[in-house]
Length: 409
Image 1: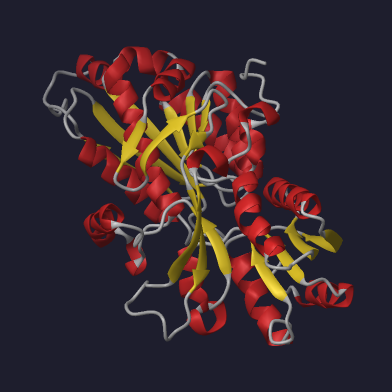
Image 2 (image 1 turned 90 degrees about the vertical axis):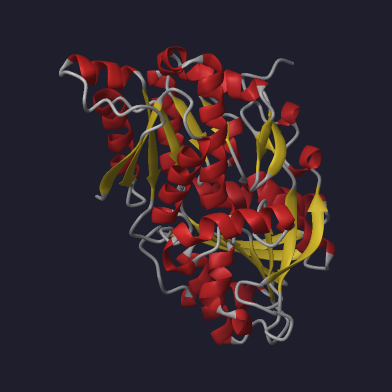
């Protein structure tokens, strides 16, 4: 497990003050944020260390507001027991005030419960399951950039409208994959389509998808729906191409795909795929300026994606709420911090303006993109062209339909 700390001083350094009084004062005036994500496995290139860096950038740009900000990070290894143990250690021993990111929905749901139990704030960026604002909603949690309902509606809905009315799912066998398959199935059937079958594979232990692709081919479904993410998605797409299914007319619905996946596949393989994001670096002048500012800090020449940009955005809005209510009050109650965040409109260079609903769902537009062909791409990372925009008020599940206990009927 990787575990590093970076102290970002927003006020006068306390090291020159007499100990132990200085330490007590410094701790009382320090907000601690724990970035918990995959830093070595299947999802590490989606956010990982770059997700930690983006939280650091947000804290630095937030500047001197009279308190210190300390960023902790750890690798949950895509294991729910590891992630839950880290979260409890942070909250019980290390004084962490807010946990951020947490890809892998099984871990995200566990952290959601732990933060509620300990009354600390949780800003979910990486976990996709829409249950975090539905049956498992919590007053301590804000769900930041995307979820399975949004992905299913945008990518899945577009595939059905384009004639893909029969589906076979290849699904990661844990909470995220189940939720994404469930939500996409709802849209497929509502549009008159059929689900011809599916298979659930062990996560994160699977790299060979050939037997599942053979089953998909035998089903004669027009669309293979990939209810997975990260390296599983890219491996599936490569292996489907090797089987020649796409040349014979089978469509691939990559239900959660990132620009880093396109980069890993290359445009020769990825061209024509459709994908949904809530952030694209080349969307407008503001996102381009934002990318130019933060990209020199990122590893491996990456550009921000919706998760790393979400870590920046979520950190910034959280710190605005802390400054607005005071450090002592923010440290005392995660519910109060989240409520203050809900009462304030969100605003940042990555996503523009937005709001947070009573169920914790942050409301921003979603964008359906098609991956460009090599001939269409004019510069490095110029990979996507916009097909359609779903307005913020339509992108996510209606508030009354989620079953969240925080929503008054």
